[in-house]
Length: 255
Image (tube, rainbow, N blue to C red; front, side):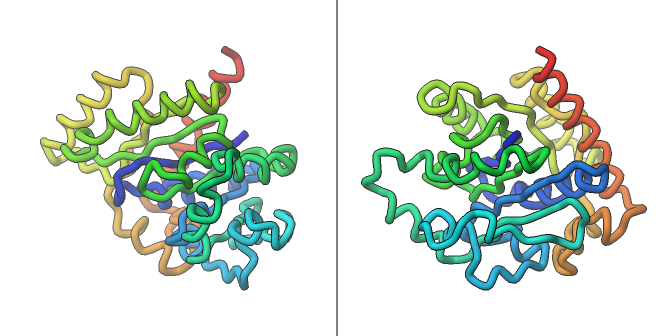
């Protein structure tokens, strides 16, 4: 099962949520593969991976088989296909290819039976990288902040996802919206949270990821928060998010 983490707005914590949710699932003995599909390579850096040229770009360009680009992490059962700055050339290289939206899907097909979940971390845009990720995915998780600008731009992104579903990937479903860096003491945050729940009923995860220094510090040690500070509110939040994630997956399976 393939899940993309995407939002055209930057700074909403896509990478943070992808790493920590994947780690929480891996700690529950699910086998999870993280694909860093962002030229900024935040997954790669945040999990302290040295790709030595073996990246998702090397796979897409045909230089190496995909199995050669899979790295172990410090989290048991969690694996990564890293990225580097070379991925930024991908868009120009496939510009005239009629199947340019399906490069990533074609490469990931052989891995689906080997992992319980494959997570794709996307850059903050709705360009060729995110389109490739969504064409390869069964589900999308959309991280947002409880602020005005997240709400303002979200409708456009939501429509773009629906367009991809209609025209390129009919099986794509929105698994949910995750409110990140949440502070219940801030009135505006509570109001924006209520707006998301009003306009996207049933789509917002119950779990809120709190503002947390420990979550922010963890990547500098190459660790998810559940290893860096396992007794913290942030670690607890991602454990809860993992439980809710599995609930939602099962709901779709049983529908």
